[in-house]
Amino acid sequence: MADKLVNVRDNIDTIDNNILELLKERIALAKNIGQLKNENKRAKWDPLRERQIYERLTKQNEGTFPDNSLHAIFHEIITTCRLSQQKIAVAYLGPEATFTHLAGVKYFGQSASYHAMESIADVFSEVEKGRTQYGIVPVENSIEGAVFSTLDSFMQYRTKICGEVRMEISHNLVCQSGDIADIQTVASHAQPLAQCREWLRKHLPSCPTLPVFSTGAAAQMAANNPNIGAIASSLAITTYDLQVVVKGIEDYRGNTTRFLVIGQESPTPSGNDRTSLLLGIMERPGALNEILSVIARAGINLAKIESRPIKGKQWKYLFFLDLMGHIDDTNIKDCCETLRALCSYFEWLGSYPQSDESSTDA
Image 1 (cartoon, helix red, strand yellow):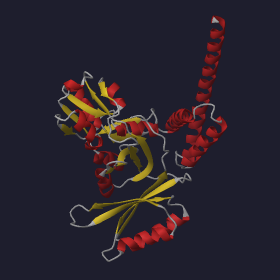
Image 2 (cartoon, one colour):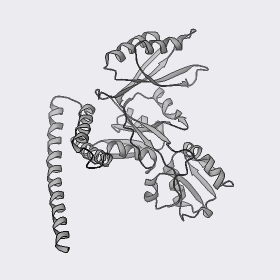
Image 3 (cartoon, one colour):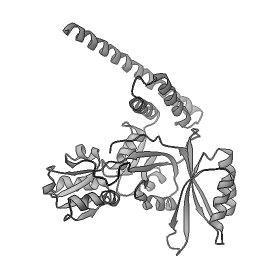
Image 4 (tube, one colour):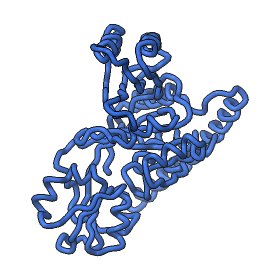
């Protein structure tokens, strides 16, 4: 029995060594590709190529290795190899261990350099000024709706959307001791507080809530005050040495937040893309209906429309639209040209690959 176990372990060690040697070969080839792309001034990221890799490996796997785990492993390998071509800096709504931080790691992998910002506007500013190549910001939640500070920042800063991440969010109530009796105040970002409203009302009816600018900030407060509980991510538990009081206190399951990756330019088509626009409509009857009719006649699926007031101009609004397709697709391109002529304001915010629908524990 002992000899058989030793032989199996030796075989595993051999396989691990072979995997390591192949990983070293892969990263060397990735660096070579980066040099060739630099010589030809081509973009470092080819989303269609990455999508083809995942599809090929999933098909070849035939379900032997769990598909979700296979995707996660190769996502980390691919992003690490891509980052070897150029180190990437990513700004996110901090401090460390926010859900936005988790979304960044999900998208860019562990190898990127992450920079915590105090506000969503600061993330946009860092990217616009070129201090980081990318930023990641929450844009909407399946329960609470749009994140208005992100939409407003698109009206103020010149950036492009490069990608999106969707994460199924599970909220944890945490504190120093792990004992609910010690909690006198519950702190978190306004959206998690709203998403856990009924649970808090039922289980902590006498505790006031304290909205702060991020879940990471709430976790920091809990780490410094034994009477503060925080609604925070699983990453915050280890980052700030907190104890879980109750897991999964959100009022509704399937609570998903969509995050946008912003940068200086959008990627080439992946074959499964979304295009975001910012429009101002003419002041005439039926103007919005005219815009929607143009999109419908082009056979384009309108995935989202949201209005936001223009600061300093009473009763004036801009509209955020998400169209299914890439700006390089003929129908999207022609539709956008028509919209540009009809609208008082037109801005293409970016075309980017749609996120996988896989969930992540947060």
